[in-house]
Every structure is written in C-alpha cells, then in structure tokens.
Length: 193
Image (cartoon, rainbow, N blue to C red; front, side, top):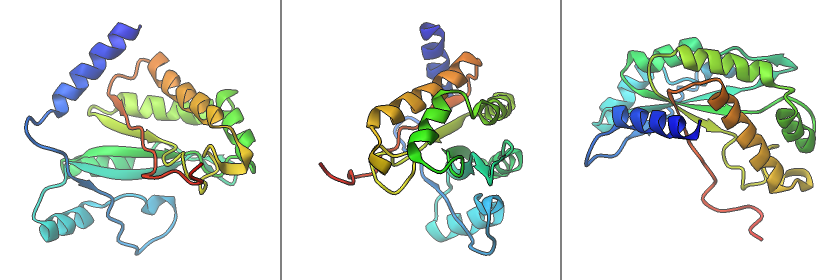
C-alpha cells in the first residue's frame, strides 16, 4: 500500500540521516580493467581517493547493465559487498543497455515485462541485502545519448516515464523496503526544445 511504502521510505531515510551534513560519494575507476566487472570502485581505489580528498566517502556508484549480447547480467553481489566493506552506501545505476536495437522497442519491452527476469534478480538481491541501496534507473533521460532517452529515435518522453514507473512498481510490489530511488536527469536537456 502507499502508506506502508511511505513509512518504509521514511524509516530508511532515518537510517541514513546525518543532520547538518551532506553525503559525499564517488565512482572511482582505476582504468586498469575493462568490461562490466570493472564498474565498481574497489576498497583500494576508495581508500586512495579518500586519502587524496581528505574525506571519507558515504556513497559509492556501481554501474549495472541489463545484458550483454542477449545474456542477462546477474545481480552484482560482489560489487555491493565491496561497497559495504569500506562502509559506504551503494548507488546502483541500472542501465538498460544492450537489450534490443531500437529505443522504442527497449522501453516498450520493459513495460511489456520482457526484462522481468533481470528485474527479479535485482529485487531478490537488493531485498536480501541488509543495508540501504540507492537505485538510479536509466539516468540522464533528458539527453539524446542513451537509447532510453526521450529524444532518442523520435521517442516520446512518456515511454520513458512508463518504463521508469514499471521498474519502480516492480520493486514496490515485491516488497523491497531498502531501496531509495534516485531521479537523475542531466543538468540540461538535449535537444533543448
């Protein structure tokens, strides 16, 4: 129900609350490896970054694609565990890459349930994770560089909104209570009209 979702969100926010402070976070890529497994800031990378900046990082970004060549990626257990190992909260950026060839069929496929097996793995994994996870689904949707954007391939922004709501509702219906949703548009829209 809506009231239980609001209550769960308020409770989760309370666990992250730091009155009078803001969260500092980073995605630190050491650029020594490639592929999806490299999309994690390692404890060594984070320690070096914190030493350089003189501040501890409260958040750490992880990038997770839906699939590669038609093979769905598994839930990134090791990545979230690595973030927890250095005391940060993960920001899991879920990028619906490499699903199909056109943007219109990508977003339509999400709302038609074609990628529910990926979402199911995410729901199970995040639900079992004992700490908060910030989920940033299909970010920078107001640009023209991602296949999920409203401007890509003459796509209507309403298709993006429907896909975002579908993914959010999928998590909510599964009862996952440790997710905070991050809405992440680009600083300016491209195209600007």
